[in-house]
Length: 402
Image 1 (tube, helix red, strand yellow):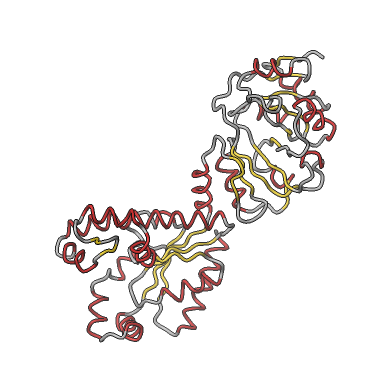
Image 2 (cartoon, rainbow, N blue to C red):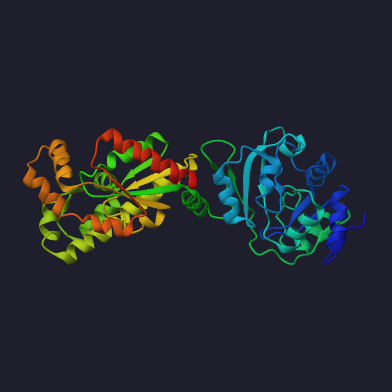
């Protein structure tokens, strides 16, 4: 058999693939050995030519995210988001396979990996051929993955129908593989796309609602409604206090900025307060440290939640618009109430006097601040039942629209 070297006649390569031939193709990572992924005989030849173990499944190259519905069952929104963000690119997404994919591709399993290569010639070839490509790296099993057409020829000259010469591959690493066929999602292979970028993108795919408003306004009721809808609730104040107990890095930064306020790994809050509450610049320095650390923890929790298949999250923060929190939110909501009603709630909750409750309210931002920044305003001046109904109505509208 003569192995053709194709540099521009992609229709010839497409015809070979449609008829069951094997064609090596370039990607942004390494060259792949492609065959018609819906042709069991062609796929069997790939295993034979590569001497690939039959227990190792093959992924399918596809021209874009729209192919997910054609070849996969139960495609989660997060998988579509990753495809839209990173395809074409070095990411393989594993999902449950539809029944018309030959069993040999799946190697006895029930899932299939999809990959959209970032190389113009192979993308064009996929469109012209009209079939997905089963395309592992174009090397015999155990050998180095090829980055040039010449390396492929050295491996398979006379054993495959053609090689599409697209020049040297740029990355030289194989794609990263994420399994999204079950929960939690798992990175199966770290390749050219860093896992950290995938986790961050999944966090971006969440529907995040920012909740703010002064103490006693009734944010807890709104958050409980969201929790009942499956949302992850992130209380930034609670996270801050947890970090004071667990985050040695934050404590180290505070001790470095304010020597003597951390003893034996424990923060002396009175000593810190004596420094920062009489010095505006010192308070700003403290806030910079704590906001950065809280922000990092919020991001970690959002990523973990997204990797577990979560879809909705809420960030509760009085200072929602300071730092990165508001930028994470698709929409923001302020819960507001009349000062006298807030004071009554604070008195019942904290067992303090009316005068002290009003002082706390006066020390916080006015309603006008929240009204000028938030996308939605809910007033909580009536009964808990009425407010809960308003929350349910608004959140359904927000999430259905999202």
